[in-house]
Every structure is written in C-alpha cells, then in structure tokens.
Length: 94
Image 1: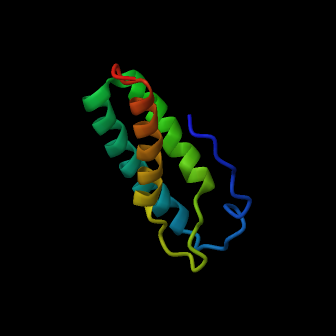
Image 2: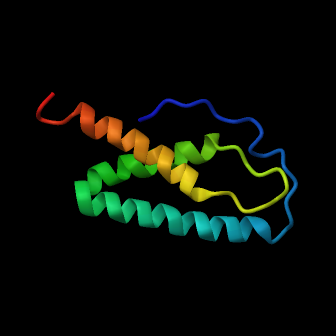
C-alpha cells in the first residue's frame, strides 16, 4: 500500500451537523465506483487493496476549511496513483 502520513487536522474543522451525513454518502458512492472499476479491470483482490489505498488517501487529505464538501476525486486520484505503481511494479515485463 502507499505509505502516507495521517493529517492531524482531519478532525479539527467545524462543519454543519448535516454535513457529515452528506459527506459520508458521497464518499461511499465515490469509493464504490472506484472499487467496482478496479474490480472489473484487475479483479477483487486488487480492488480490495485499492479500496484500502482510497481510505488511506482519505485519512491524509486536506479538508476544506469552510465546511464545503470535500473533493473525493482527489482521494480517488491518489488511490489510483498507488494502484498504478503497484500494477506497474508487478507487470510481467519487469
């Protein structure tokens, strides 16, 4: 997996009470779409590792200070980057 440092500011921002539910719903949709795509392309084992990468990227992201919805695509791009390194590193031509 990608080794990343956890951002200590993740839990320090004030957000409206309904925001975490909306954030969780949209995050779940983004993670599910990412997982399904990786599963279709590389199988369930790789998809599980990619989902863990996604969660690790989520833990290290910078949260919007104004309580705005996080950009989950940044998390997905970071996880896809980890996936690419893993796929390239294990490719038959290496």
